[in-house]
Length: 204
Image 1 (tube, helix red, strand yellow):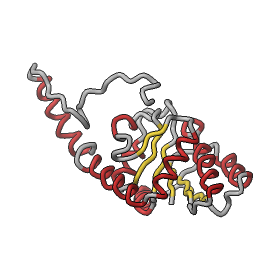
Image 2 (cartoon, helix red, strand yellow):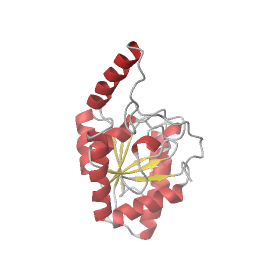
Image 3 (spheres, helix red, strand yellow):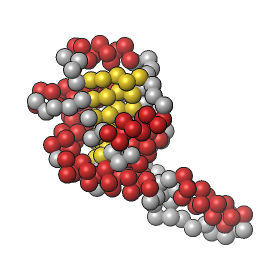
């Protein structure tokens, strides 16, 4: 199972997911792509599914409650995030990683450079490069052990670092230091770490 979750908007490029899995079908690789969400591009996506002959491979689940979304994430083999630079952060990536998904994320989404370590706890692909997206999905589908390894490391990334409890604790410490006129502690990773300025072409 491959999972995509979000609003069907131009900035999220759900059509890239269809272009990628079309190549999987051509390779004869068995898969199901599930879409969770709704939005202005839904009719266009449904037409693309028919045009590409993917009716037996793509399922539209519509809008779901957060608990139901988490259940689907926990069942999925691969979670893909295809957003461009208009995606400020993209909390759905946090949720997918916290659910133990192996992820393939666009380099343009705001959260990707901070959450995903390419080749360690997931894959990054250059936004808009459908062939790269396809290759990385394919690699995970054909390598269940790698997919499981990425999923475990993705879970640890969120559970041990990028989560609300740690963010709250660090924010309190940061605020107390600033109020006291002291230099705040900057962490090497996670909430309250230093965010370097990234150029759009940061991912090669």
